[in-house]
Image 1 (cartoon, rainbow over the protein chains, first blue to last red):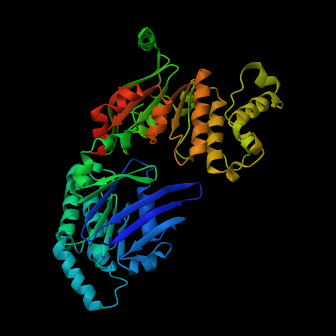
Image 2 (cartoon, rainbow over the protein chains, first blue to last red; image 1 turned 90 degrees about the vertical axis):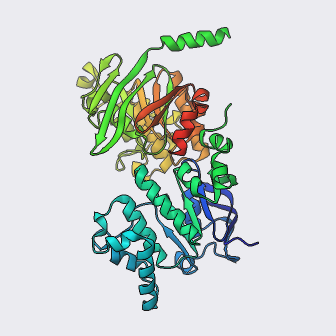
Length: 239
Length: 257
């Protein structure tokens, strides 16, 4: 069976040597795949390669069986791969509604845009509740959920979330993770990179642990979380 | 066994060069450092690790006087240093490097090295124009760090790794007793990483005590004689690298709650 997204032997870096040293990764259709790993493992670099922001020096990246390595970010977006960045990215002085609508900027069919806006406001109640408020007036967690809603305006085939829990308090974090799980249950394929391994792997159907530029451990999310090997990967081998 | 005992006794007797007691710092509603206590034994290479946001850099900023502490005591060589300005703390013998090397881009490497030198006593009165002694010392240090070949290059034209080494060298020119290194391994390639580790070891053998913040756990576990783990602004574990690595609380902190 072909995976929705497949990386094989990917090497990539930023000039000072490769950060990814041969990454193999499969994201199955309908899965919630979560990548965790210590700082510097290469998690964000994997996302940059998938989105076309960084060209791999070796290896293959294919989406629905077609090679996308080295294609422009715009071409990759057009194939339905949408990424929500780590940092806050809403336009702070625009309203929640305007922000979400902007997610459909590249959709020509205006009726479709309206339909998706309606769908987004049903899926993410905050969008309807706070539609006329400026994005900056929302809490960090609420803003994150509005960013999800905005990304959904493109009806992505693969939605990528880069560290959605960053800077959130534990209560808000669980709200954000519940939202992520709900999106997946509704059929969306998700690829998540997460610093908080416990939260991320806890909801993941497929868990991946990266370390030093390679995938070192994978399996079911909770299963990976409970694998003693993860300790070695985070804290180094005992001498 | 006997060795181990001697070792342990040695450790118990070791003088704490820096002592942090009950240190706290809030930024608005965020408690960055929360009743944190830890000590840096003289002659040790102590690693300060912990997940993102655990308060490591804030501890550095408090120790070096870049930020005032809300509560707690900082003692260096048995004297209180809390409340002192960064330059006073620096003059007492605590040097630091930053996550992103801070050098003077419009000065050459060798000029960068001369800036932090303290000239004291009669020498500074009578030999204002003669920097040859300092220059020799600076060149020796550049050679030690293997960047002597760029002595005449402007700081701004140096590579990332060269800047990191230059910053380290420049701070060392003030002859600190305690060096705080903020992510010495950050963004550094494996070959340079090895060189930095090796130089830290050699400087340590010459008597400089180190406290370093680092995300590269492998680097810390190899280099450091002591490791302290911060989580949510508190020291939750400390000891020899192997003991710390096997502490379940440490892994818990890293995997998130």
